[in-house]
Image 1 (spheres, rainbow, N blue to C red):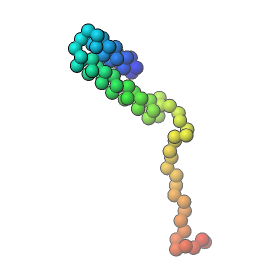
Image 2: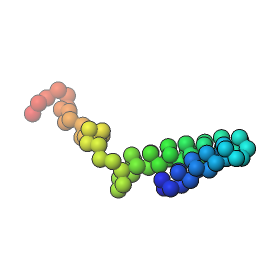
Image 3: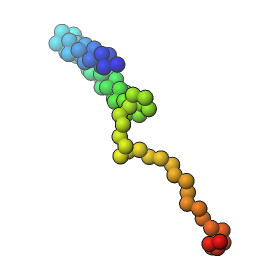
Image 4: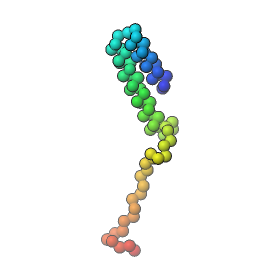
Amino acid sequence: MMVVVFAAMTSALIAGRYGPRWLSVLSLLVCLALSIGLFLFEIYSPDYGFRMPWLQVQIERAPHTWLRGSHA
């Protein structure tokens, strides 16, 4: 996937030097969108994602509430 991001960036640089400006801007926006997508995939993927134990959020069971205030 990084190869596609770098290819888009390279095409933006080449288009900026030799081609029309709109093609360069379009390639740069494609590169930005691909890099954001890759970042989000790497963060949220359970198989390939980063392990950040301080950000793990788990649903815990609600504490047991007593009916009518009795503590049996």
